[in-house]
Length: 229
Image (cartoon, rainbow, N blue to C red):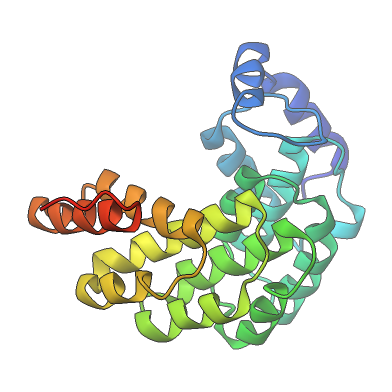
């Protein structure tokens, strides 16, 4: 069993000042960043996950400790109910896109808790909402693209930057899977920022064909009032 002192020792031994400085330019968080590589974090999280992950009694004083707790929670063999209870305790500590996204992609096997993640979409806390969006995108988009994008469009009204970028990310992913439907869907999106960012992400994607990108660019220009013939 990995103890809290071992976690603290891991943080001390692997902290990298240069990487921390770099990460600080990408991540805005109220917690200190120690600059530990994702690979090392994943390896430690696997060790922690071998036993029950007790979020309430884990150290959560820096960015990497919060990440370790969430990554271990997702990798653990705990029941779905236990993972959801752990996530509820961890949610108040998730205050940036990196923590959110790196934790959520590991929250597998929670499809039975769909309603919990939908409820997060109605929160007044942006990163609770982002957790909901990213989980739904990662684990439900592939099953029913049309139902998923309509669910998000109908339920997410928050205009926080990180919320809108998560929506654009999801919609761009959906374009890869059902391009024709999503071209029509984008016209229904009321918020300019989300429409524009979705199309921008699609243009940047290596998984959208050159022919499709021509169509995307024409639509983007049309929405900007500078239609390309």
